[in-house]
Length: 204
Image (cartoon, rainbow, N blue to C red):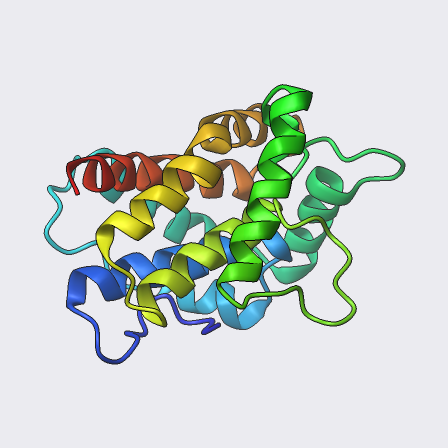
């Protein structure tokens, strides 16, 4: 996964390359705290092209860039750990199953594992987190777009089944968290981006 959100995966239309990069960025941000290189890449990234300056997505992206420009990696690590790791219990769960009813969460996790097996995708050695980690779901979307070049219908089915049902609640939980600062901006951008994705994939 590139640390540069402006990098374009080869062989994709610019719109799909941008979508894949944003999914990759969200996967990176919600899996581990940003390091100095990622913060610098974010701060120096271009504005979102083709969006009016006052649009929700463009504004959320600008705020995220500005937040990255004033953050150092030690502060980022402390905030990430407080939010998503914590001592005993994290302030915010990064798992999609935490935001749906228990029975549905169990069913979704089984279905997700079956889907990943069918796609030939598996957890990396040494990774013990359940497959419904928000970062993992975003990375699957990136994979479908940038590596599989999956049809929009296939992307839509995965998004509607595994990403969208928990997206708003996860972003809300992060935005409302007491220790959130930079990650409040990250969650605001994630929500704006996923709302655009929902509209795109519904139309698809």
